Length: 138
Image (cartoon, rainbow, N blue to C red; front, top):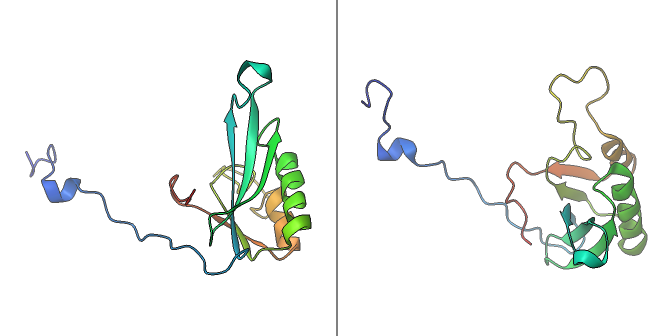
């Protein structure tokens, strides 16, 4: 069965071990950014999204903002508030949400950057997209 490709031995079934991503050393150097949609207010209010900015070095919650959806404009507003209070980080670390990176393989034209990515590029802030869903420390 192994020879025929119908069965894999134990070693072949084990998943590859990935290199852990260690936190940065300095406060404000790398900021993890993400949104989470929930019924945060139960039946007392509408369903909303919480946008979170977390410092990678300390896991400190730097900025929290409730918004209607995880949209580009809402990320612009939340990031502007963060930058106004704490200044410019070296990079933002995010998932592969469509706000942060172009996810369509058949995209025609353009520079491969989203509006959010172009804004960060103009500010000389890098955007790092995680390769796994469990890349966050919080």
